[in-house]
Image (cartoon, rainbow, N blue to C red):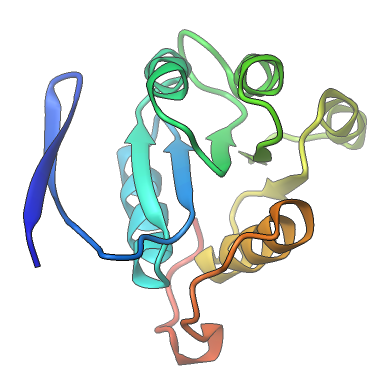
Length: 160
């Protein structure tokens, strides 16, 4: 397989080209270890993952590329997850959006759902929970061919 380099701000990573990439997912979180863990978990089951360390980087990527789904931390510097959700819903058409948060209250979850979030995951959570949510939401809303990797065969990861 061929490799290519993705550059986001000061960071660059090598990615492997795939002949049939899975759904494209943007993961935005200001915690590097969460960002890396979620990226690994999603790539392992076949998603094409792009990352952003804050909402500003995420909006820049949303302007340039088409994504099938966004997974964003609720509390991030510069542009938070709720404002990113509003941006994505106004500018990206039908896109699956999952907010993740350690601080979500029931009222905040209701607000997020009214703004168009498909799901809110409370931290800490196992990456497999996110994979299940994305598989369900992408399959229901978009009719996207989902990665065929079985969740049962995936190695257990630490909660995010």
